[in-house]
Length: 599
Image (cartoon, rainbow, N blue to C red; front, side):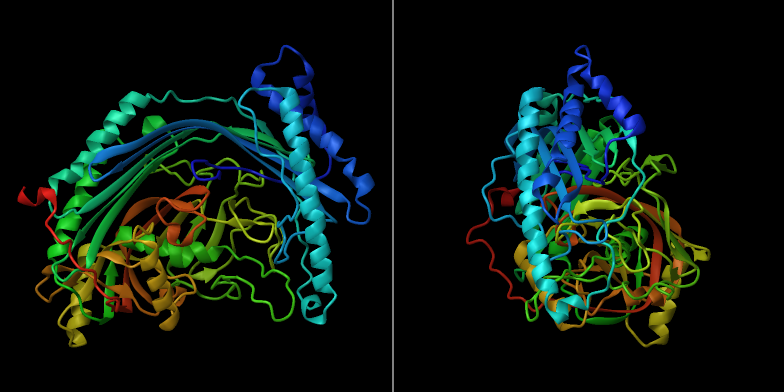
């Protein structure tokens, strides 16, 4: 996708424009073509001219060129503490040029310093006018910078391979081949009424004024329209509408003992006509306010180890992390001996053919689906960031891990892309991410029956109560200091290398069925291995939408790229999970009461 306020971007493959792609773009030489075809003509002509770089490249000649451009118009409205604080309407073009030197088997990517350029950069100032000469100039400068970056990266990679430790790396190709795709869609920009949306944002932000327990609140509304265009030297030429409409909000309160409590909501859509109505948005924000009000008066929880029932929304949030994030397998980069390499592997990397879920479970990621039970799926996308259309992938069959989500960087056992390069990665490659993740079980029971089973299990084990989770803090909406504390606690307790977001709404369930909201718990030692110990799934399911970003736990408002995703999941009953309160020092209350404390 695009940089923050941007959406889906593509980048892709290599060899020379051919067949239908060459025919389609050659029509742009006609002076009567529409203005929006000027970009296609400029990309085509500069791709052809860039082949001259092979003359000066020596043994590390370029074998692949790719140009992409996101042309975005954005209305961004921010609110804080019940009032609009900023309205920004912008139009910009975000380009990207990729050059690979060497060959598909061995190129400039996959080294710890791949993509790092030490020289000056003169490109990046793309004009908003459709000016052919300006486009050519910017493409030329971008290509020059990308080529020099690739040559430097290749030199560093060869140097690392000269030592025995680095040369023992598995001999996988660096880039895979795919069939070129030509798809030049018609550009459309939905009309966005700035005045109307600003008024709507003001009314929505004011919802939190109804809750005296909400000490602070924030809201962001982003309406992004415009196409993405990608062309590469292999013959791929794609253009598609790349719209996204996103509202997220957070409210925070403080319990009597000083503990900060919060709740958040994220609402997203790929179609302005299908975006939530103002009434639905108001209802969602009011729910956040109600949750904060309930949390600040809820009792602080104690450590717990035992059965846990996760309702469908919480289960989908958990699976987005423990399952979805582990379905991408990054390759460890080459480096020099003794150098620390920032790298987080997948917990599933060596588990192909092994059981990761109960045998009643099947999981499919299918980004080609645009709706589910009449509701739009935000995980739909026509092309990934490498210009590859997504394929449905059966990742888990009868509990056994069968496949990964892949990009054009081959991984062991999976040499080709299945169209899931959705986020920028590290070391010169893209990162895979889920689109629409469908989690199904062949054996289910109603949530009511699962709650009865939870009570029976806790009673048999002599526990005074069980635990029910209704909502996790995912995408993560707490502060960065909280995230650091969460990551540290996860590492110390033997949990996942990627910390798991804590519960926001968690309840004690007593033998008589009574539910009591408690606060201040997070998971202890939770990893993807816990998924194998799921005891049962509910017949009820929920579709959970969120925006994946290039940041841990899909932090709201963070990261530079947006990759909307959907997870459809049943509720899950776990045999045993551990929960514990944080050991952080609690902040003090404000010196004087807030102005609305008299309401």
